[in-house]
Image (cartoon, rainbow, N blue to C red; front, side):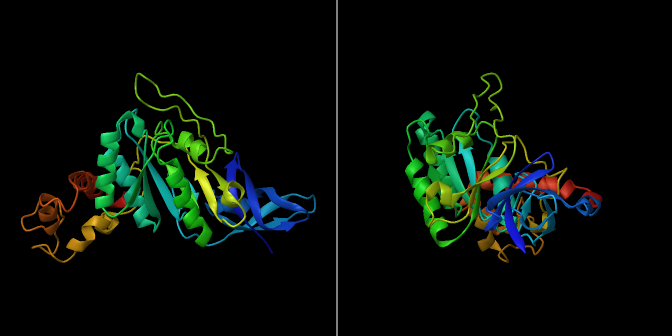
Length: 311
């Protein structure tokens, strides 16, 4: 039985890293079985697969093994850690988009780690963002690819996780956030393509066009296990179009709200405006960050209005 991990896919052809060398190969190119299309199965970067060798020396993907999770954006399977990349400026960050990404990660049992980039452009703002997310229960690190601030800290954090686990990690964020530039600073051997930011619209040129995994053992050394992904940037996470999760899951996807469970005046409290809501009381006391509650309310309205046939 030949097992492996999908590293990337382009035009229906996938590169798979084999668990064990086979016929002198450690990586092979494969296609999915024709039945995958009939069963509406799509191979994702990060998928664990079983391969079937063909008489002509080619390989087919025979089976996709059970996934721990799968994401629509970024398109990844079996993710363990997502580094949520937040720029200080150029473009200005949207807390709503950031918190949507974090909520999707929480729902899929993925550990979100907050990386604030471009700290050289506004150090005070960077520290404020760090405070917001540390107060909300997340690991938050301030970085600057320009000055190298925090680059070594991110590298050591990832090493500490990769030596004890074998995680699949992804850097994800809006276009222009500086993901590829930061990854090049952390891992100089990657040499990822980077792009300039549009001065007119403050939107980054999307230089990463597909999701690809890089072996941490090749980046750090043989004692480190797992994979690192660079992902295409995006400008929004469309909850109206895609089923990331439902309204009933929203509260639990905000970890900083969970201490309020069962403590509101009304059993069916929406935690948006009700009298006697424990979440609102904690927001007023500064125990829950105002931006986090604003993101929750925005998501609540989107999910509440979503027709049941779209859920």
